[in-house]
Length: 204
DNA sequence: TCAAGGATTACCT
DNA sequence: GGTAATCCTTGAA
Image (cartoon, rainbow, N blue to C red; front, side):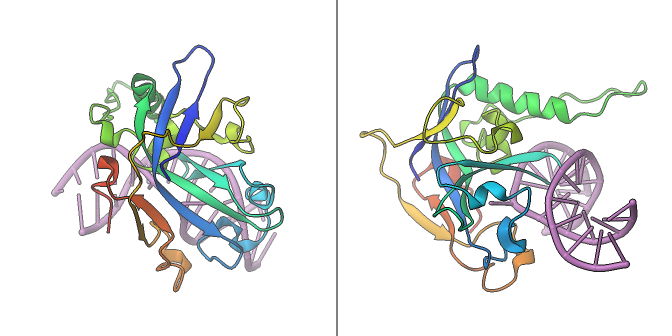
């Protein structure tokens, strides 16, 4: 929380965002975790070393970025749910629009497809969800398995700057995991920076 | 092989 | 506040 997510793509401006919302998924016992069925092709990186990106597709249309945590052999990860845009705002907007365009079906007839209506004007809504964040930072499953502790893959995480605003942590239940059942639907493993304008509309 | 459903979002009422 | 969109992964057959 408060750390900086950095994205470097050749020919594009650098993107930097301050992490203000995350969720933790811890072990095979956690019925909300992708590791709940044990090791599979999809979740394999969760069983590897910490500091690695785990990127997966949700609902057939959005990618989500996680950071693997814990020791080798123990599956755990932190889902990055929202960032405050700091650097590369226009590139983030472009990422959102590009994602929306890619989602459109080819127009087979005369019907006009509406242009993507992406609310890119409001900075607090540019990357305020896991799918939006991945689109804004041009992150996809190609980044699954990259080392987030070094810069060679063009995607990494840095500590907060010394003069960054301190994080005010608020913990709540995780979002969208009703299938997990009690007690997993209630454990407060979602963390929010309560002082961030990005999380001001956060549920609960 | 098959059917079910999802760590979300945008758009509608 | 409700729900469609959309593709993969998963467990079961």
